[in-house]
Image 1 (cartoon, rainbow, N blue to C red):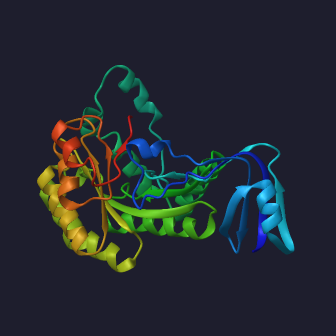
Image 2 (cartoon, rainbow, N blue to C red):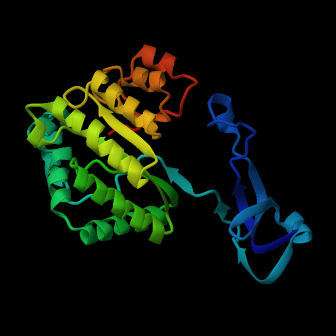
Length: 300
């Protein structure tokens, strides 16, 4: 076989091999596929062979100008995939750390207009160029730490124009940066201050205006909702995600982070790709989702 790239002499080549057609679970997680003194051959950006250095040096024919890298005994493994990130936003919330240290619950910080809403104000005020530069910095750091693919959520605009702005910046970063980005529309990240007294009107805005516009734009593959006490109820989340599914989005959900509201059960009901956080998931939620999707536990 011919290759235009060959990496040799990896002390350990981690292939994460497995024969499953689904995310690994239970015993399958121990199948990490380590090859000692490993090598990787590729052509046109696609891996065509892995094996020992001796085997690939015999079986691979290098094209003229091929790149050969000597790993010098280092560990070589696939790039990391981060399935839950917020890349495009402005501002910082380190000033809230003192409140957290004092034991102020996050939902109380949010109710005071902090947390997500603090970042919303900064993101709305930021220009596209400012958001791009900030996102580029975060992606550079992620790449330096080994992340090569990341999901990127919106959710810090909470108006149609500002959500589209952040999704468009995400698209621009995807086109320019080595980290591959997969975009998620998270317009239901919080109830914005202007809808504090009538949150159902904001739900209608998401369903009637935001979701159709984002679907038409093709700027997001997934739709996500923050299903939490004081944010979006299970029924509000169901309405948003059901409409998103009808429009062709794949579904994600922030669920059961602080209150066991039933978000995990909703994820199972609607066939969500993932349910994130789940720090206080109920036994029923665990049972309902034991084989349906790839849950993410993200203690914060």
